[in-house]
Image 1 (spheres, one colour):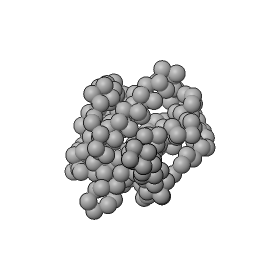
Image 2 (image 1 turned 180 degrees about the horizontal axis):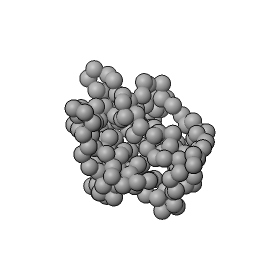
Image 3 (image 1 turned 135 degrees about the vertical axis):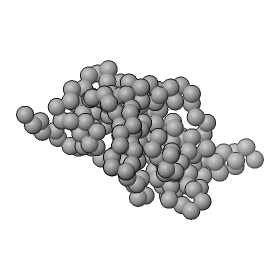
Length: 195
């Protein structure tokens, strides 16, 4: 029996930047499901997580999602954001790294051969497999050199993931006109007050 799943109907703030290449875009889209600054959350209930995972091609439409799995997915999302912040000059948080390691173990990541190439793929079904698949995508991006360019915006209230296509990999904000400008203006005002 085929289950129809409605697409995620909320589109949060989208960066003007071109999305990440290949499957790394799935990680970017998964992490960018919350707007911390404005308090908008796409993954507010288990059914919405299922819709997103189906839309991203990470789960089948007949997958069941529990409240506990939603909580675990939100933890993985923030751990991925933390790891992307490390690509933007922040220290990696060991607790967040443990969350990602557990997700990989719970989803039983294995090496699969697809013709002449090897890929990491989850051996567990459902949400556990989907979360492990996201961790495997990050691992693959680290191996092929694309991961360091997927960064979390440096603005403290943002954290939006963007793909840095600059030659010297120096982009710090998802949008210079918004987050970059606000950060620089705040720093300028702070300097003026203390001068």
